[in-house]
Amino acid sequence: MTANTIPAGRDNQLRVTLPRVIHAEWIKLRSLRSNVLTFPVGAAIVLGMGIVYSFVFTNPQMVPEEALGDYDPVSMSLSGVSLAQLAFITLGVLCVTGEYSTGSIKGTFSAVPKRLPVLWAKLAVVTVTTFLAAIVSALVAFFVGQAILGGAGLRSAQIGDPGVLRALIGTAGYVAGTAFVGVCVGFLIRSTAIATTVLFAVFLILDSILGLLPLPVYSAIAPFLPSNTAASFTSLASPADRLPFWGGLAMFGVYMVGSAVAAAVVLRSRDA
Image 1 (cartoon, rainbow, N blue to C red):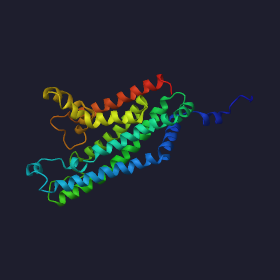
Image 2: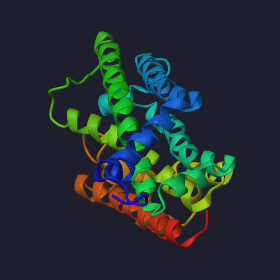
Image 3: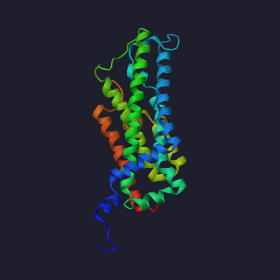
Image 4: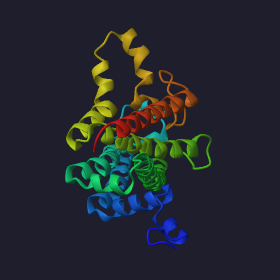
């Protein structure tokens, strides 16, 4: 063996593989306190707002009587998801922009010269951890919310009722999907403030802005907006003015895949 020859075993230890990059990204994620705190904060928002909305709905002085006959008890207990998603969007963005702001991204790309495994690893770690946090908080919010509604004599749902489990899993998948998009936009924009502002606008404000358009135009566009596609697979039944279940799921998947492709192209072509 010459002095420049690396033993086979040592070469395997030095080889960059996707599982090793994923492990490194997992260590990064749990090493920052701000990242770790995102999960209990997001869960607390889902549970807290779900309890508040459920209690408010049981108050006859605050809810019109006609509203009591036609409502989605699952969506009622998951009312906090629309706000909690902002925490997980921010998590996805920060996992990328945080490294750009400190310059540590250069060390990451030095260790992983092909770069794309870094994108896939960050997406895997952020999406899986966010999904797990979201499904646990959604289940807890569901059981507590249904207990409140049922205790007040209002219509409630059971976990085994048709469409309930699908809505809960869909809700967790939607939240994880927003964090997924957050990672991708983080690579595209590289600025925490700009990336989070853009995503908050897209997921929270865009629908209201487009609502100023003439009704026929808005009605044609609204079902395809990212936030509105979620209504198709996060509720017991798809609203009449939204895409059907598989249509909404497919459309949201298009947004996820499109953002990942754009991030991959930019990551390959742009300097760190």
